[in-house]
Length: 134
Image 1 (cartoon, rainbow, N blue to C red):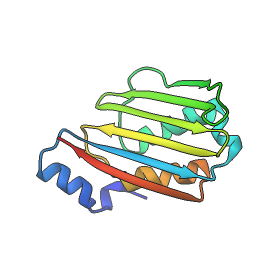
Image 2 (cartoon, one colour):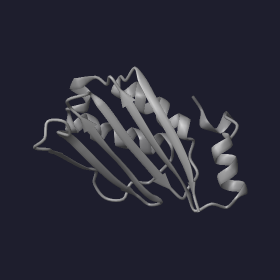
Image 3 (cartoon, rainbow, N blue to C red):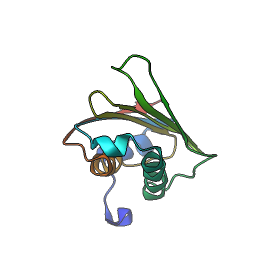
Image 4 (cartoon, rainbow, N blue to C red):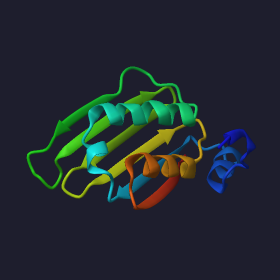
């Protein structure tokens, strides 16, 4: 899909029209592929491909750390600084869920991010919420 041929979403149009500070999107993805969310290299690959897709410049290396003594929250967490802010996520092993957050003062299409993430992690359902930060 070529982003230059898409018309801007309502979120992006509002962000530009209202000169907001940025767009914050949270994406909860359920029933993800267990092998993918438990693979640090696949998570790093996701970040690289996502940044290319939405044209965000990564700042430094992607941090991926596995932790959590409580099995309910155990899994990898990821942080990637981008020149316009931050991408982060937590991957819950017990429920095979991905909790992804993207915040940027450069406009991006939240549904493009959500579609890509759901496909990459093999999720069957998702909830996406976007907020314009002022």
